[in-house]
Image 1 (tube, rainbow, N blue to C red):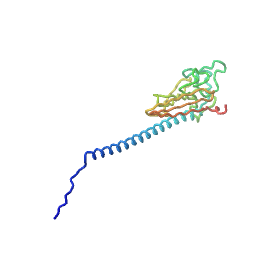
Image 2: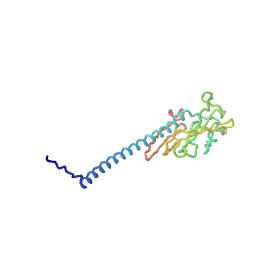
Image 3: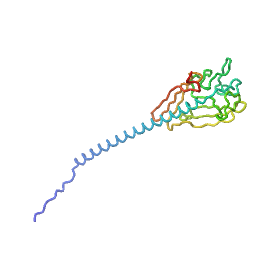
Image 4: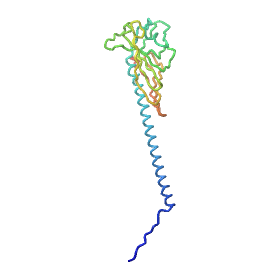
Length: 218
């Protein structure tokens, strides 16, 4: 009986090197595609985070400013203009401007400010328009804290017009990023508000006029 002779030839070094080279090219291509996809995902996530933070901050100020009221106690200096820093002084009579916006204001030293301040009813259910009682009002201040958080600071007045109680709440925040607010005086009832949020190089900015009651008709 004849026996067949099997070849014992294996993979040559050249074939092994070619195979490894092809594998390395494929692996590199897959890794590059993966990194590109992760980069796009991170960029999209950062852009969405920036847009959400900017919108939340802008809408918080816009919505609450529409509830601003004139505080008539500014005539006596017990609250309103004379109680904020820097103080706002109207040097000619009448001493109180007919405005719901305290900062920035035509009489303030800053026409553009990184804070927005106004008065609103302390309790809308019991509010008396035109009341001379400071406890009828509360002061609202929006400011940036730690570079990434929009804070809402609420100050309740006592009967003498001083601060009876103050509470601070976060209104909007962007983690691992920055948040900026800039308000420019336009009129006694309106501001040009700009809010920007940035995260990992992705920036989103909103800019528009915002109004206290009566401002849209000016």
